[in-house]
Amino acid sequence: MRGLQAEGGTLIWREEPVIELAEGQVRVRIQAAGLNRADLLQKAGMYPPPPGATPILGLECAGEVVEVKGSSRWREGDRVCALLAGGGMADEVVVDGRHLLPVPDQMSWADAAAIPEVFSTAWLNVFELGGAVPGEKVLIHAGASGVGTAAIQLCKALGNPCWVTLSSEEKLQACKELGAAGGALRQHGISSLQSEGPFDVALDPVGSTYAADHLDLLGVDGRWVLIGLMGGREAKLDLAKLLVKRIRLTGSTLRTRSADYKAGLLERMEQRLWPLFASGELKPLVAATFSFDEAEAAFAELASDKVIGKVILVR
Image (cartoon, rainbow, N blue to C red; front, side, top):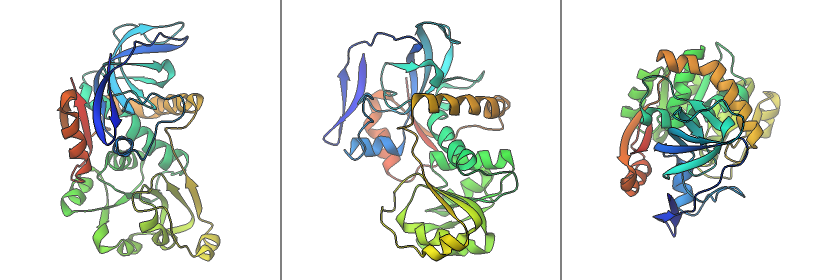
């Protein structure tokens, strides 16, 4: 079995032994895999896989079930997508059966592979940890990213007006077409969004750059969910504002969560969101597809910061 790994900043296909299934596991023949910024960081040596996880890149994939061990809802031939701690960029992957979701009828492999990581991240951090309820305003940073475009769609579908920050007018227009009410270009600063606030939830993969702004943009009892550090890890904050507004700052990662936690998250997502995927109200935004043998080009495309949505590897 071939798997894509990173070594010294270079992508390398390696032959890996076939893994025997344990109870409750499923073997999936991979047809498509989504790229995420975590993969870029792992390639650069800045984000090693969690202990016990495979060094093969890829946090989400879609494919066909080819083997099942023990009692399971899955059968050979089922079309599924998977949330992974690694291993999606390979010929096949062995995964906890609870971390699979059914691919909606008529959905392409590329679209299916664009769902698990970004929609679970958006759902978890805006609606579960962020506690957004219908009518509350949401601020989404990096709005044109995979997670950002997923969060915009979720907000539109679930009744939450949302605003975005991003890097270009082209991206802003695309986000408005998805359902964002407006936004700000990061190079001009984001303080102009105060006129649209106060916001109830902020989804923040940036960190330092916008940290102080959140204390002005969020309202009383606002929830600031930090999911990344693209803008740096150190910030100076006026804690009096945090205190007076009762702002809740939550740090959140998904990759290192326990198997049981991920299983529960995906179960809740399937119940709440899968009817919306089936109806077409939710649809992953695929910006570009590359063959698995074009992985270097796919990584370069994602790193260019010009992508609106997801980059996907396909067979």
